[in-house]
Length: 216
Image (cartoon, rainbow, N blue to C red; front, side, top):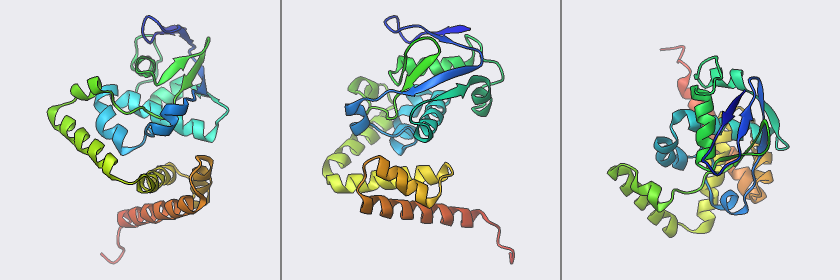
């Protein structure tokens, strides 16, 4: 086993060499205002802070929590290989480092031996975090914030529902399951229906564009 530490104030999590029990870490505020780990916001502004390994790990953990909301057992070695982080899950290896960063950035929390609670949303960047971004990204983030203030709430919901639906179908969900998941996330049925169909069309168009033309 190896110990996973967030910061000196967090509980120590003993990471077994085989599996880790993953649970949902609900937060009413962040769940409402935060961003899906697969969103453009996280990829654009959080990626350079978390690092690619930690970002991809969080995406995988959240995707599996959507399928298993009561929690599930994460097979560590298999997950490390799938993320390109090697076959060994050592105390100072890249996979445990990625888990550690989730705790350090308050995206996961140890809850007893071998148990890790994970947030399903990522909070907006703090002012201090924004100031650590490259100057160009700081400017982009400022424009993004101004755009959010100008965009009506209904339009923001429509954009988010489409974004989430597209993430679902790209992860392998069919049209009906994508719509059902949007219902579970409390989107209006009409909005969920529109977003799921929009995402499915986009997904099919992308697949068709990748298929070679036999007449070419």
